[in-house]
Image 1 (cartoon, rainbow, N blue to C red):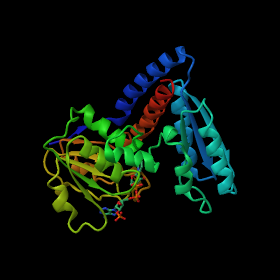
Image 2: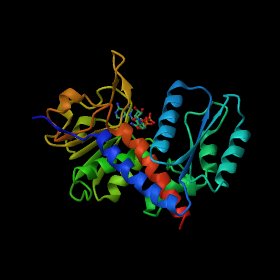
Image 3: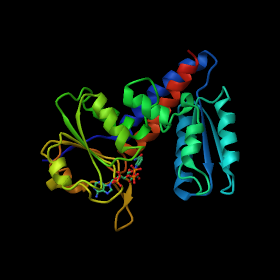
Length: 284
Ligand code: NAP
C-alpha cells in the first residue's frame, strides 16, 4: 500500500491565489494589506525565512516592509519599533523573526505586538482566543496543518482520534487546540511520554512536531492513518527531512505530507491568510 501525498505546495498555490483575489478587492477600496517583518541579527536560516515571507507578500500584492537591524540592537529599541508599527495604519501584520539575540526577551517583544496585528498568532491573547474559541489569529503552522486535513475532506473530525507529538507553544499546543475545536479526540505526547508507539498506533491522525529524524516509524502507524510531518531536520547526508520515516510510513498510512513541499509552504501561506484577514478586519 502507498499513501496518497498531501501536496502542500499545490494547496499553497491555490490558497495564495484566493488571497491575491481578496487583496485586489480590498485595493479597490484604497487599502493594501501590509506586513512588517523585523529581523535582528544575522542568523542565516532567519534571513532565508524572512526573504521568503517578503517575496510571498509581494506575489499576492501586499505591501511589505522588511526592517533589518544589527544584533547589537537593544530590547528598548526593538520594543519602540514594534510600538511604532502597532500605530502605523498601513501595517496590518507584524512579525518579529525568532530567535532573537540572547539579550532580548522574546516573550516581552511578542507581548508588545498589538493582538490586532499578531499575524503569527504567538501573543498570549491569540493563544487564549484559540483556547476559548474567540476570534483571534491562529498560529500559522498548525493552521496550515488544519487546511491540509480540510483539503482531503477532513474538516469535522468527530469520531477521529488525533495524536500530536510535541507540545511547543508555536506548534504542538495550538495544534491540539485546533484539532479539539474540529471535534477530534486529542492526545498530546512529548518527551515524557512512556510509550509513544502505543499512543500513535491508536491514531487516525498523527501530527509530528518534534525536530528529530525518524521519531515516527512504520511500526508506530495504524493502517490508513493520516500523517502530517511538521519537522524540519537534516539527515545524516545533510538533506532536509521531517520527523517521519517517510519511505517506511508511506507504505502504511492513508495520507502523508512530504518534507520538503508539505507543511513548510503552508506556514507562509497561512501568514498571508492572517494578514489578509487583519486588513479586512481593519477595513471593517
Ligand atoms: P520544540 O519547541 O523544540 O518542541 C519539540 C517538542 O517535541 C517538545 O514538546 C518535546 O517535548 C517534544 N519531543 C522531543 N523529543 C521527543 C520524543 N522523543 N518523543 C516525543 N516528543 C518529543 O520544537 P517546535 O518549535 O515545536 O518545532 C518542532 C519541529 O517542527 C522542528 O523540526 C521545527 O523546525 C519544525 N517546524 C516547522 C515549521 C514549518 O513551517 N514546517 C514551523 C515550525 C516548526 P518536551 O516538551 O517534553 O521537551
